[in-house]
Image (cartoon, rainbow, N blue to C red):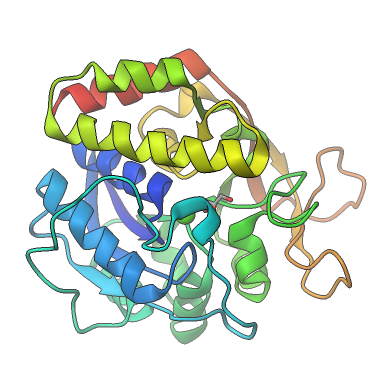
Length: 307
Ligand code: BDR
Ligand code: CA
């Protein structure tokens, strides 16, 4: 089994990422840490706890992390995820609270305690990850890989910046310069994983509570994507990080250098993905370019049927 830590800001697609991970026995979730992003930290943490209840992750600790970016002002995304960060389905209040440990400390402890290298899945702004790497500079060697959703060769929050990187560019820069192997699911690939009405119908046909909730999450997410971007469905961005850990053969990846703009007048939070090697900078990331779309949805549907 692959040992994973999920650092997230649920968030519809973060929630579905947890649901997919919990369905698969080859992934061992060591802990969930939350960050401010799609909504304020209390909300994203509450949402993570609700999803844990939904899928029966009773023993996985949920630790509340950073309430704001390293240096910038906090901005959330209620237009996309609703005021709660997870609008749509009526989920019961969580049966338990978050742990007393800060999310960044939790990442450090889980990595240090693990007997084998850990894969870190990061699907929100990278604040917790950057804090952990700063506070404990010896954990790098026990992190096998950071698989993150963020960036791309175009933007969704500004014309050139994607939300997770834009929300905390200084943190993202720290992560990309860490030397840890980084796998990036950026908008170029996550926009290929579009939950269209046809996909949502397939999900709705699965006769169990978890699939029904996922159907409601996707319906809400698709409605805001229609409104904001005129998309015919919702890209399930964050879910690709989990799918990659389960079935990397579904993904076409390219070795590239990625730099993060932290200063630009118009371009803060932009990832400069050097697809053609024009900068001569050292390769620091695997960047997702192509997805086996049918294979991805088959994996997702099969996982939901297990509930
Ligand atoms: C990213 O931002 C959030 O809205 C999603 O959860 C995803 O992590 C997409 O830009
Ligand atoms: Ca997210």
